[in-house]
Image 1 (cartoon, rainbow, N blue to C red):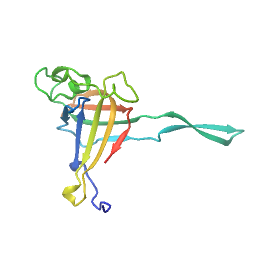
Image 2: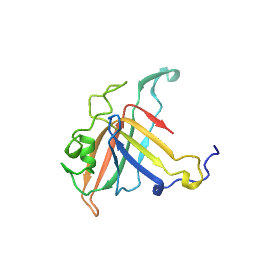
Image 3: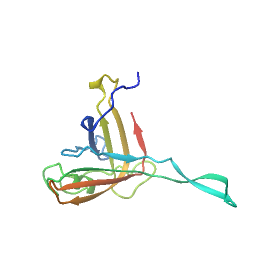
Image 4: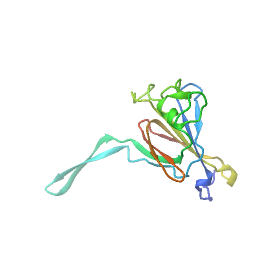
Length: 166
């Protein structure tokens, strides 16, 4: 496969939330700003040991989580019947009350309700062999609300299960 020569833009992206059932319940994010971001640090932080101000040893320290966020426009807070509320999806409430956490199987076990977040950047329409996909697993999410024109949510997440890139 040749290296892609087409830079991707926010118009090429798609964000989906997935639960942990065998055939995942999914929610594609609509009315979003196109500002999906995540930070994947080194797997382990560094423990720097100094000897009178000079580097003596650098050791692997604690494993680090992936963090990120994206914003989308407010339409409603909750709906007990109709699927579509991101707030319900990440909190296992409303129409998504039966969702299954992605954090309860495998390692690490995450007691909090977790989802997976899948980001896809279109590639095949531009001659690439595949679309470009990253799935962030075992994400604990928090939601911020801001009134404005339009009012909006920002979903902040911390992922403890890593990233799979395809």
